[in-house]
Image (tube, rainbow, N blue to C red; front, side, top):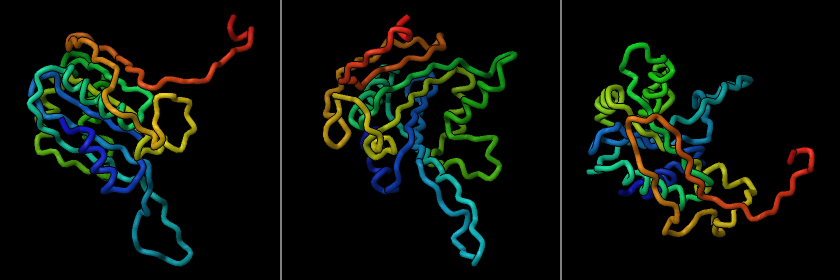
Length: 216
């Protein structure tokens, strides 16, 4: 599964720092996946220049890409995202399981979160939130609405804005990434249980001693 290769190729082409990477999958084997790269950059509202007038900048649209792989188990996607987050130097990887929102009295927030997870932004009237290359986006949304979905999130140091931070992580190599294999194993998955799992990838090396009043 070439998730790591896709991320690095897009980052090299865009030449912009990444803020976060997300992957969303309907809770149905072999369903298409939605990979979204969230950029930390701004562009001019218009390329035209007017003397004395400085137009406000706008955020660079996220890149949303459909990935078609014959996956059967969520743990397979877990492994691919763990390997990608590990190599890109992320401190942690979050996996969240979401229930179907197509049900009676489902909160509107769940509906909006689902749409955003698959790069559909109903509140983006200007259509500038994302650039979508996903012919099966509507199918993914329909499957996630009725079967639920899983979403992964990590913030990369390699090719990311986070590389500017002086983070205490003894697992990182000189360039901010890590070499395979990733030592963290996937957790079992239950699509009927909404939950949030956090895979810790980084490890601090400094000894932190808290004052006595904080320890209490």
